[in-house]
Image (cartoon, rainbow over all chains, first blue to last red; front, side, top):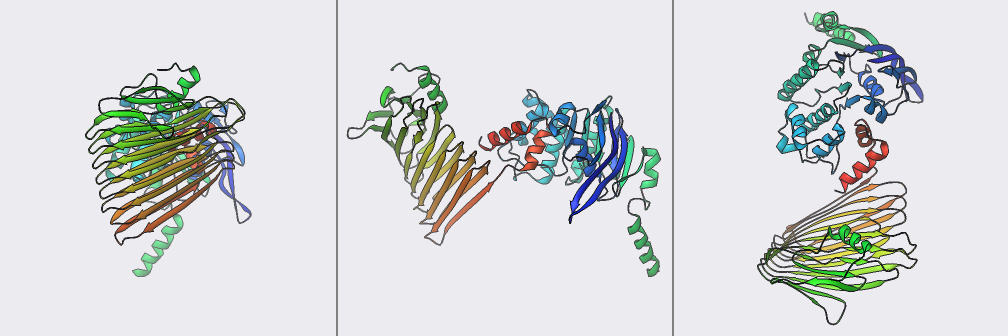
Length: 250
Length: 308
């Protein structure tokens, strides 16, 4: 289980400290698929990066499987079982797709095993296994390879930061199937997805809503979703303006 | 074949991937002497009479054969200049493996300057692999200054793989090529320098015939306080296409100078130069750390992949 205790994160902006995450406390229980959603700039990706160790909190603690990992490096957290799929996948000149999958698996990954991971994300393994992870791959291809590397990790906690970004509709359907399959096999593991997509929200066991760096709400899908979809909760100010304009027009 | 010691055998493995006497034609040079030679029905290797070096004649139409001419040096203070000429007959298709390994455990500099000339006949194809390697804990430098001249006739094709990853203190590599109509040259250079090492790589490719093409790509890593210079010049003297690329990773206090040189002397000459020098991107390291690698392991993986 992952637990955030009073986490705060700040950045320097024009020589002033700006809080991006404000005193967030929450739990990600084992055996659950949890989706974090909320308006842009609400702190979702930052929270994911704090959990992976890419950013360090100004205050608060992060606990994972009963250990305080707040000061642990990215490497140590990865070795403890936290996997992270980047929103913007990284390109590597020279490294091939198979190299990255083999590093991700952390063991002697067979070619067949690597191909299985690629097939899961809708890539024809034969066409991609020896491709360089460079500019010759499209954003959508890179994204699917990124997700394949995270699947190869087989981690206790797998974090996906906006997995739908840059993926076409066909691949998105494939991605939903991947998440459904992961959810069925989640057992003592957990999955954390940062997303705005209604279809991803719909497969969540639990939803967390972040707004302005604060925890706005957390609960089961049935508790949270009805208040989230088709209401003004995500973008209240925008909703008011739109209503006003509509009224004027009438 | 002359008996080689463990160090010499290790150098042979490093520069030519040789674990035993190679099949086909070969000449193994060890400490300025021939340690073994073999010619075949299609490939003749003979010593030059006027200077130190070899005449290597490959008959027209020779296919799927190879020539190995590695050099190993283990005596500190040895300095040599070797002239090797390759005459590749029309329509031949062969692999040539060269390379030089120096192990210097003494205090005097050891130096090998190999001057290789390739006369490539019409429609012939060669793949040339040259690896340079240095080892030994002596204070004497390991110096290699290869000169490669390539003269390509119509429709010929040359692929060159030049590798220098470890242990060479000082190198000045000069490559000159002249291409006739329809000839094609592809060069892939991989280079890594450490410590105070210095490597200068100079290319001058003259595209003289219609339809000639050249693609010269260098990938390099400069670590510690080492210095590299990549100076690539393409001359388009006919309707032709040429591309040079210098892609470098700079680390520590390393220095890299990339000098582009394009000279179009014909209106239908299409020449391109690309150069990029930069440190390893932070997000690349972080990505590999999220896979469980340490920062140092991540760096090594990125460099190994880059130079692969």
